[in-house]
Length: 342
Length: 210
Image: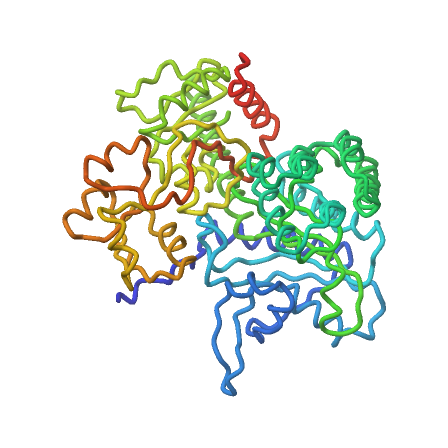
């Protein structure tokens, strides 16, 4: 093998691209700082068992794994949240709550999630708000995310979709789905597979209810349609929480950039409340996401509520670089036209 | 503008007819043409024509916002896409076929020739049958009679090619039809346009005009 070759999914950054990437990172970190988020650096190499607890076995298994001298399984960290949660429950257990922590750190996956995700090293810009369960904490992290995107000049070109995991969980309970069926239905909803959803069982009401969930996507008018669809108290409480959050975003005049999407049910074994995804025009896949994970920290110590999100620095840099290049090309066109007319 | 990746070949004409019924007409395009890209009259839509296996690739990367491709291709490559609509076109079956069904049952190991290595491995794996998968790109029906394999896993529309090559169907793995697939980011960022196209296609399928 040639020494010139580098492993699949890895890359260099140099010149303009490296400068832009640094600027994006600095922008995000300064927004975190303004919101009083304190930087934390976690180990790059950690015990594999941490991530099996932290992210679930399927996600953790995608990581690079190797053994320590004593035979214990180590990994190159596939996420940062697990380690931050452990630090909150141990190292920072005595600190006043809420804790506000942020980071810019590379994460690694040996096996990518989809064919279009080529990279195996991604830098996450993220924050975690720990020890606050109220609606204002949910709103706060969304405002932080929106502010970073605005600072990057992406005001009118991003979309954050919102959902609450208890809406689906309440419906699963209402129709007495066991874990296997619930996971099957969740996957169908996640891929918006309406033809399969409408036929997957002989219970027509059940099938139609889950198929209808996929259509509940848009702004607050989704809420009234959703209220008609769900009759159980668990889902209704979640809908109310989502409606309150929407009103709070409305008061901040941010709803143009937000959307409710009750069909977005990915990562639902992990999140316990609000869950959201961040999309940007020009990026073929999402560039970030987050949500509330009130069960995670109890793995490492006392239970406490937490919410956070990450933005993918590499994905952001790619979109911003393309936008800069396009702007330069059109500027050159204008300059050329200008000189011709002179 | 919405870019639609259409699988060339088997389902191309039916796919274009469905799009036309939904009010998206690529009149400038003929299947004899070498041009692989076409715009509709309104300028709101652009079609690109690629090999079936490449449709999920273009859509997953977001180069195309949506696509029309067979379920067989999606099952084989398992792309991370949205599958909101079954177009019901180019209906066919994915089958296991062999020259002599009896011989197969007593074998401790099967050689399987197919264009669908993943699906074949899953099918025989679920039944506990050890298999050697031989990946071919076409004319799979030829392989058993020449001794390359014991059975084939292949797509069958009428069954004529199987019969003419002395093969009979042992089992139907699944059915396949043309599916409308959507990129996850486009579904959010171009929500209105995608919803409009989905509705128009659905009305077309139900026999209502655009």
